[in-house]
Every structure is written in structure tokens, then in C-alpha cells.
Image (cartoon, rainbow, N blue to C red; front, side, top):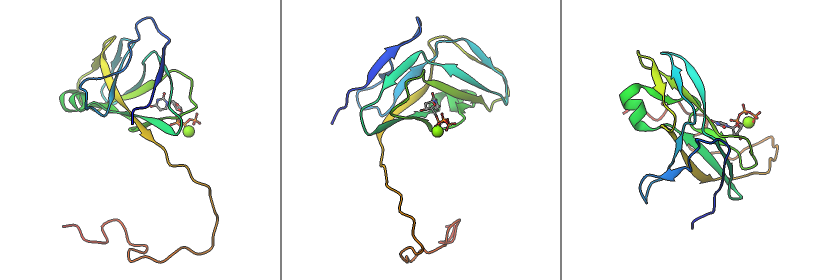
Length: 145
Ligand SMILES: O=c1ccn([C@H]2C[C@H](O)[C@@H](COP(=O)(O)OP(=O)(O)OP(=O)(O)O)O2)c(=O)[nH]1
Ligand SMILES: [Mg+2]
């Protein structure tokens, strides 16, 4: 099933996000600004995009592996969550884990956005939960090999 994603450009240099290949999961997001990210620092980068998500979906802002591998630059809050009702500009928090300053250029592809279904729940407060074989075990309780 293909959903419709409404996209509004709110900056003169904004570009419509696109799938680099037909089967890709992520739509590449472009920067509309030029900014240097110092080593160990994070910067908020504008994309010039406002979107209207299909009902029952979210957008996840994820890193590009090429930027991570070549420059140690990634999305700090990955995956960033774009709520269905959000009508502000999509921005990307990039962090530079590398040793050299990283220059974000205008119209550089800085991250990718995956549209995903959201499961919503009604909360029911209870005193007892069902028993399971895992129980309270976690954090390596099943062994590390
Ligand atoms: O990488 C991101 C993450 C979030 N947002 C926008 C869309 C999202 O709907 C809104 C709120 O994000 P989130 O819920 O992650 O942040 P919060 O700190 O909980 O803020 P709020 O109190 O506004 O929900 O900010 C972005 O543009 N980029
Ligand atoms: Mg929130």
C-alpha cells in the first residue's frame, strides 16, 4: 500500500525529499543551511520542509550510514520522531563524533526519513500481569553467546 505524503516547502532552497532508489525505505532529507559542526558538538539543521503525514503514521529521522562511516556524523536523537500532527519545520539534530569539524553544505543530504505505522493503545492500570517464561529476566539473562 502506498500512502500520500503532503509536503510543503518553507524555504527557498528546500528540496522535496526523495527515495534515492525505488525500493529504498528512507526519503533523503536536505539541509537548507550551511553550518559547521565542531567535534563533540551537536547542531540543529533546518530542512525547509513541513509535512502532513498519512493518518496513523509517524516519520522517523534516521542517520545516513555514509555520513556516519566517513565523518562520524550521525543523528543525535535517532530515530527522531515526527508526530502525525506536527506542522512545524522538520529539523535534524546532527552530532559530530569525529575529530575534525564537519561542514554541512546547503542542499547536502543529511539524514533520511522513514514513514512508519504507529500502534496506539488505551491504557489499563492493573495490579497483576500475566506470567511468562522470561519473567523479570533481562540484560543478558539468557546468556551472552
Ligand atoms: O528530530 C526531530 C525530532 C522532532 N522534531 C519535531 C517533530 C516532532 O513532532 C516534534 C516533537 O518531537 P519530540 O516529541 O521528539 O520532542 P519533545 O522534546 O518530546 O518535544 P514536545 O514536548 O514538543 O513533544 O519536534 C523534529 O523536527 N526533528
Ligand atoms: Mg514529545
